[in-house]
Length: 95
Image (cartoon, rainbow, N blue to C red; front, top):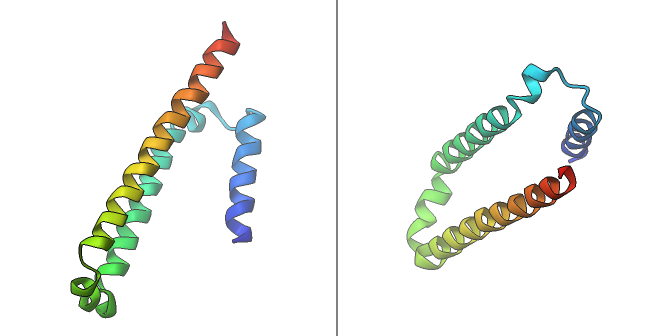
């Protein structure tokens, strides 16, 4: 956990101090998206290859599916709204 917090802090500091080369900074969104896709893919492989999870799918049922769908949708909605608020504030500062 310490490594994750350290990496996040280091990335934040480098980004806020504008110490990254422009070529990397301009591609940060794409790099982040690629990392997220790789992470989700490896999680899917891990879940799909676990026989205990596969055998428990019938017991988990619709409740687990609903929780997964609504938690994902809520996360996406909050991220979208948060991004809108941050961008709106930044545009207000720039003006």
